[in-house]
Image (cartoon, rainbow, N blue to C red; front, side, top):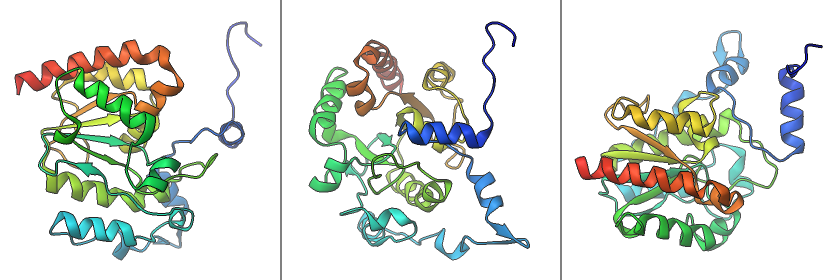
Length: 243
């Protein structure tokens, strides 16, 4: 074996190790949907993919009643989001956590306190932004997020973006941005793209530019990244000031 070169793992072995470590794994939605096709007919019902939504109350009701994927079986409640429904800034996490599922407030508890302080540091009130998530149900411990689950919730997020019409979409967390953009890059790779603003666009809502940073949960688990998160916040403030 050549010194300094790590042998590559096959995909099944990689996923096994990730599952054992309790790491949520990103996978291309397209590849998963292709694997679900039989004789050219998709097992995903197209009628489930689009929900006609006129108002925020209707989309919230649809999310709360949603049974599109198996996560509805383990949740206490589905959470649409919270905050200003006409916000210029919209933040997107991967999913509510278990305490959010209990309280009914996304990004609550210690993570919510940290998030509020992060915004306050750049003179933004938490009530002036809108906070949502890619998945609307909490994810059980050691559960690997599947493409089916991402696809099931994708329309809800698109509809929320269309209703709120934010000037900037801020995606928080490595897994969240991987699932959203379908590219297997590190969060620092995505953060580097912040310098390309406003050319980095959400692929399915073309008019909304993206900004990427760490989630409050990640920062609680890895406080050494707070310095980089603060750098992101300063850059975000400059972008906001230019708008």
